[in-house]
Image (cartoon, rainbow, N blue to C red; front, side, top):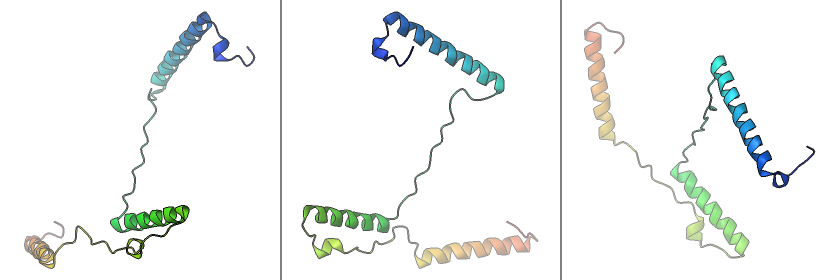
Length: 118
């Protein structure tokens, strides 16, 4: 069957091809079960890195500049400047002091009990 298009096949030929493909898949599943392999391919998902707010802001400004150049316009200086982004999860000095005091108290209790690890 040299270079036949699927459109050139008859319905009987297509049905036969489908049944043969089903047989091949069932035989492959049996072989995989004998060899102890999984019948479905392993899903490999890559975890995406999370970009910081500052990086996302820089990317947004760069994109605006690219579009401005493409359109032949300019963007205002206020938009072109990358504004510093305040860190959202900054801990206060009082909070750090409380955590430090609690850790020192835990270690003092552990050392008094003769432990070298918590």
